[in-house]
Length: 179
Image (cartoon, rainbow, N blue to C red; front, side):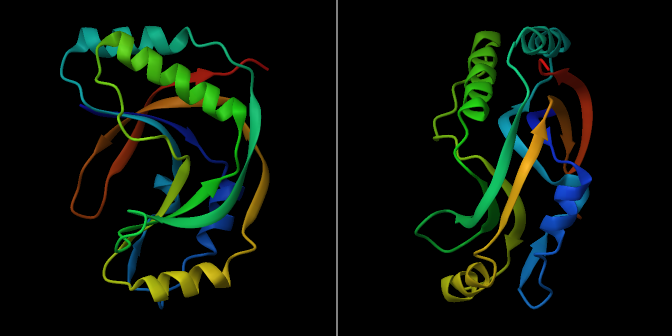
């Protein structure tokens, strides 16, 4: 079972992000159903006891609900040929606190530490052959992107099943934040 932990986005946010989708770009746009903010990719977990322990530990996280702002566009890998286009999240202490707690819980259950720095983002598209110039032109068209006051009241443990048309994400457990 392939798992990850994420924040789902309200439909009104997904609709605004969907408006960025430009059919003239040679990319594979993510569907609104798969748009989310990943907090921690877990990977394959076969042992039921490990999944149950992860769920129990995630349920113990205590943090108050907060709001976040989507701001800016970017791509991965940075400074190389673009492979993924994303929308970024404005610096947010509560979001980083939640992500750090999830990272600590993941390690306590036995998952290897994430070695890359956490860059909060929402994947918009997979690039099929765009030049940096084309990507930067797209970014310039949308440099005013800003979606504010996005409520974060919960985070979710998802299962991800890979298919030729893209991954299918199914929520397994929801964890409410303190109101």
